[in-house]
Length: 491
Image 1: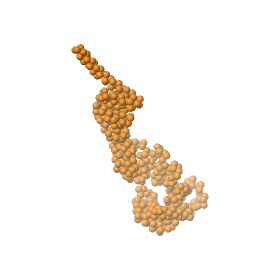
Image 2: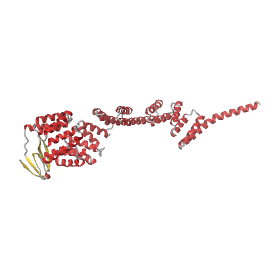
Image 3: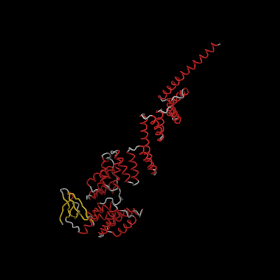
């Protein structure tokens, strides 16, 4: 009897030993089976084996972590997060679990949670390079997300949220140049050019090769009338962005305002070449030919413009001025009358449109209806006292009616409304000079087309003649090329 009891105790002891030795091995075996299934993409089977392994060894950190990964693959995300958290609770140094949990948050744009999770593992294990790399990657993704959402908010009209998000991006990545560019674009659209300029300077300071920042800086300088600075910024962009018609257009206009006409023309021609059908760019090209004293080329480009858009504002006024300057008075009157007809049609739909009323008054003055023109333009100025172009038109009306003192007064008023107005200064000087001394033509240029122009020769060369001519009560220069001239005679 005693022997039987002893043998029973021995058997029980051996079974306990076998259990203690065999269970851990079985748990490892089941875990390894789960890992094989996971690696071969059989995630449901992997979950089954990992769970069986945990029944035998519920304190295995690595098994909880791997079970979380398997759950994640079959979209059982809440269970996956629970397993990661168990692994972290069991082992505060389980860096893989921290990273997996952080990545989960980041993938769902829960960036604050992702960063907070990674900060924990970085504080526990500061030398963990993998966690550092992931942290930097998530912060960058967070910044980009803020910028994208900020742009969406701005487009939707939620300016407060847009600014908050972009400033958050800057807080996350203070050295990221693009954030400052977006913030500058917001401020530019709001008309705060000073602040936009400051932010753009920060952007190009961080990355001088980022050409969109230089382009926007150029636009700010252009808008504020700082054309030399605008030109400098645009030139930094051309090499990197040689297909941008708007860039060439603005570059040409900046040079035009600097009266560097020969430099402006190639850029404006390029802008027109790229677009092919842009009426505004065609108008700019024609205007530079006009302002540089090349009337025939200007007429040609204005005609191209009218083929694109027959009712383009003020074109017929421009042509009327050119023809009047060429002493082609019949053609000039025809153009002014066309402008009058266009303006009447537009005013029928909007009788208070200041721009159209200004063009209408200018054309009326061109055909000699100066009193009616003055009456219209004075009403425009009364309603729009800051409208510079109306003051310039009023000056033209006073010039034509011989009231030089009032013409100068109107020009000076227009000058106060201009950021840049060198041409106004020249008109003031010109009118003042004519008050003191009348213009006496000294030569007549006879052209091969039968036209003739009187004026004073200022400069001659083998290929061209520059003739100063009288225009109303002011003067300007016309360039005639030798192959277009039949002869020149002294008066």
